[in-house]
Image 1: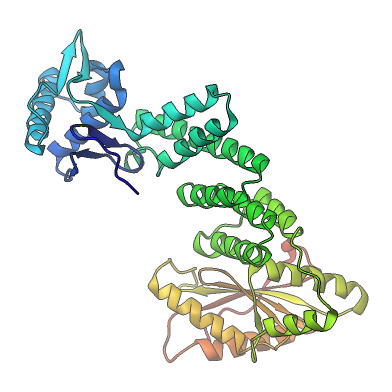
Image 2 (image 1 turned 60 degrees about the horizontal axis):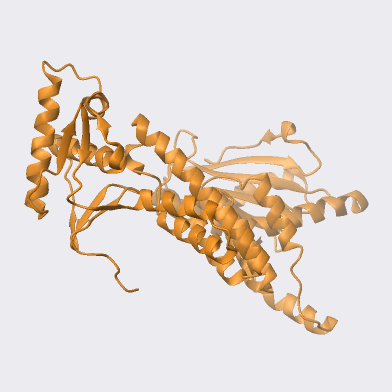
Length: 412
């Protein structure tokens, strides 16, 4: 992409953490107190633009509730040091910061381009624009200006947290409006890109539904199926959260629209058989697939009278508590998965529910046999004088969650 940045313009990034760039050189501040005050000063002053910042507000931002003998002098000292630092950075010698009637302003002599201000300008232009294509372009440009929360490492500061909420609201609005226009234009390729970008920048906000809708609309059903499973697994395993009801409802609705090319039964059956490439052990599957198996087995029980149990296996430490996330838990989680797969029958379904947790659907078995399965898992999992173990919970599929019965602990 061609660099369109102009010379002798101070480029300011507020999304993420503060960054100042002058003629290709980036100014970075260390964690020392004096430089932290420089950062606080630059953040509020450059963001305020032509409105400026009152002396009272600046004093609160720089010194909070610190008891200083002469806070006015302290502010002047921070401003003086900031001017010296900016000059050393390579900016042309000027006043940099001026004061008028108790309000501080950034100098008019050095133009500033701020990402947050540009995003807001594009958003407001889009609201007024009548031409649909130009409106879409403005919304998309505004979306891509947003590269993370506004000054994300300073969320405890009141004015910053307020601005962070405001810009996230603008971002969400622009994504939704752009998606509406793209849907109307049937531009599903760009709609897919929009959904992926929004989900990466603002995770856990259900933007995956935009991508899923675009994949289904383009007829990319294999990609849609994989994206569906990857999304649910991401929420469960990486984030440790269940997807929201809205997300699951929309994903399932969109998933139901997936169609395949015309085929004869023999070809379909061969393809279905080829997809089950697990020769031994239990059937390891994603959460959406596990959900479907659970629902189907529960319906079959109504007619066949089979006894089916749902088992939750959790890696615990020596005190019986769930382990903290980390490389040790990841290694034990993988070992637990292998232990379960080699301890259950070929017809039993397994899902990695989260870090250190697995769900197992034990079909056509008894409660006593559940205990036997647990012992087999322990024999595979426990090595030597290992202090970690597995905690088991088992429910009959026809039981309610309140009837959960904790069976034996994981340590022998």
